Length: 104
Image (cartoon, rainbow, N blue to C red):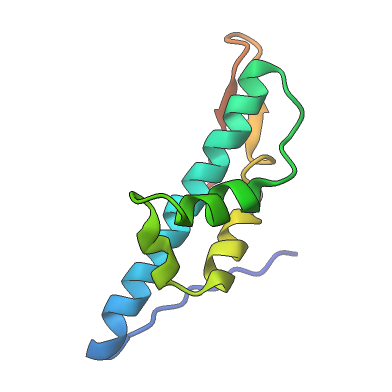
């Protein structure tokens, strides 16, 4: 049996901005990783292996994503290691990969 927990946190005023940055950066890294997996799937390529390098390390070196270096690497690496490539399903009618949304 799976257990489900709901958590609510009440950060102090000085914690709000760092948490917002961390969650925002994690979301950007997740979306970039998902884009790489979808692109590989559409083009018929194998699942990329160096996603962390492409999404985090190389992105930090560009001007438009330099703000990723303001957040801890651990947050970024954990978001990039998610199951972005496993959350896709094949839609037999359309023949393209779609995201599977789970109601948890």
